[in-house]
Image (cartoon, rainbow, N blue to C red; front, top):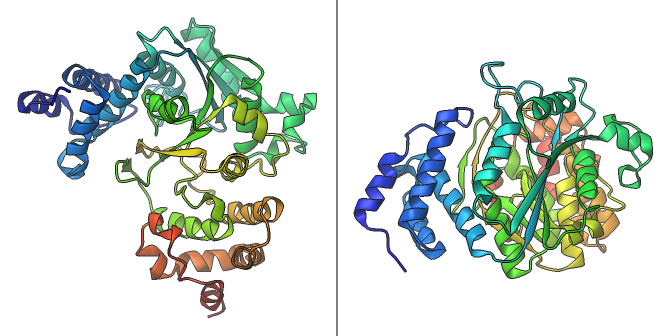
Length: 417
């Protein structure tokens, strides 16, 4: 194995900008150039991993661009090392993305995410003829007509035939079973569209077909898709989930959602112990084999924001320990986020309580937390968010598998004063 010498190391660091704006074309080109330098200097996956370990040992000492480029280099090396035929379908939903889908020149929040996702996948699979890919954009009933805008962009600026736009509203109108029991797109909050898009992907039969759903924005560079493919192809996993909570994860997160996220994780883990080994259920970067998708998407309870957890739970119940956690680089894209102001944690938790009751045998602790969550209204929940126990906020979510010190009675006492 070739080790990375100090000259190569310095060249790679020097080539990385200290800034990284995912909407900046120059920065995006530069991060790919740095990834290519890493691939040239590190001839094996093991060598790239050794280089990454050096970076992880002192994360803050190195540019964010270097960290992201290293994830991309690992991903591309994984693709190079796979000789089997593999087909990847990318599915993502759009709702009020009419600004971010534009260029920065067209709108201040423009990310040009559709064409950039295509470019990222073309970079990843370049030189890998055994890989094929397609992409499905699903309009989630968007009154701003993001789906129609996506069609216009593809018609005007993309000459490939492997990217399409489909509309949840049309699927509901046609009575496609996977959309039941929805009667309108108002009943979907991303989940209904992703489930429909995944179902649509299963209608094509290809060897080693992997279905991946990211978020619409650029928070997760799709050049990292190889990281999700790796455990599915090499370890026979049914699913792989991008995780922002691992030691090797690189995360730039804005806003004040971290403590709320900790409370959310603590509570759902009390209700769904089967998924205890998964921490970051809400990261928008997940992969499933097409066979697994076909098995788990019928009769879904949730069509809104907690659909991720139901997919993971059904996959886990079918095949224990079948989900791989994958550390990724994730850079928050909040400027025009459609979920930042919604704060859907309470409705998600109440749906998770219903999942416990539908899928799992009776458990005294889980039942207690499920009943507590269902009893909350917005006023009580908001008060709890302002008074999250320090025993939760002072710990990392990785600790919540074992730590169970905050009881239902403790949470009730906070609300009751």
